Every structure is written in C-alpha cells, then in structure tokens.
Image 1 (cartoon, rainbow, N blue to C red):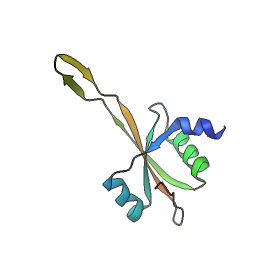
Image 2: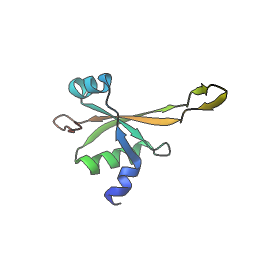
Image 3: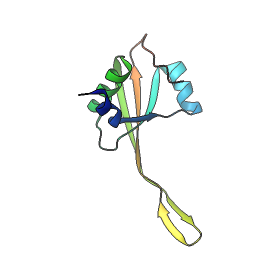
Length: 95
C-alpha cells in the first residue's frame, strides 16, 4: 500500500488535555479514524506513517448526537476513535 492510502485510515490526531496526558504518561496516542477501518488496518497505518511499533489498539465508536437549530432537526456525524499504545522507547511527535 502507498502512504496516501494509510492516511485514508488515519484521518487526524485528536489533541485534548486527556490525550496529551496519555501521550506523556502512558505512551498512548489518539486518532480519528475511518469508521470502516479495523484494528489491524489501524495498526499497519500507524506503523507505516510514523515508523513506530504498535503494542495495542483500542477502538471506540461514537454515534452522532441529535441537534436542533431553530426549527431544523438533524444529527452530528458518527465517528470512530482509536487509542494506540506504542512499545517502550517509541514516540510520535504530533505537535
């Protein structure tokens, strides 16, 4: 696979206070991923893009929330989050 196809699996890193703490203390990184991607594809993409070794991948699916603007009803998008744990010594420079 080419590197562009790996970026279709990994959309972008999620940077929050909690994810920053997880990076420093637990060596875990959080990414917004394609909802159709599985753990194996996520692991391969992270290893190829960032040149690191992945120890574990956890995924969470989030359903879109109902929203309303005046008289129009709708939903936010559903999305998938992956928390990737790296082996000791490997790091990813996100910022």
